[in-house]
Length: 140
Image (cartoon, rainbow, N blue to C red; front, top):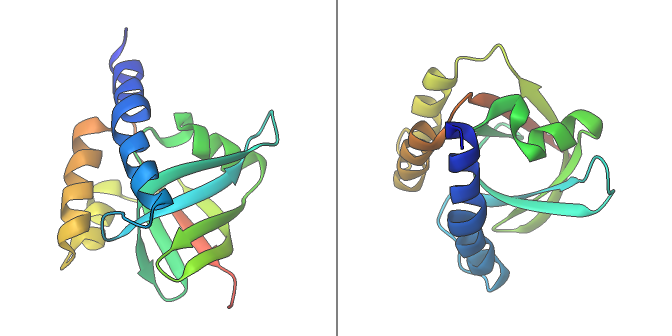
């Protein structure tokens, strides 16, 4: 099994279910949101917990596996997403940003945010080909 497959399986079957369960009952780490995309082949709703930072009406996240992440492939097929934040669900449009400097972005995301410092460390540890994704939220 290659490194990406191992790390994907580890997140998919251990870390993500714990965060998803917490989110379902109203408990989730600070600065973690649930990203909802539409499956590119099935059309089914897909939910993934991600670390995110809000900035001027946009959310910034780093996809650990870049273009290979299932949610990024779903975004490529349909960029309309929803995000569950502390205030409830918000709709928006996601934009993969392959040219963005991920290491600079991770430092900016985690500045002054202890929850995102932990998230950034996990992303660095688990990533194989990280890429930034910006989500422009619709006006409330």
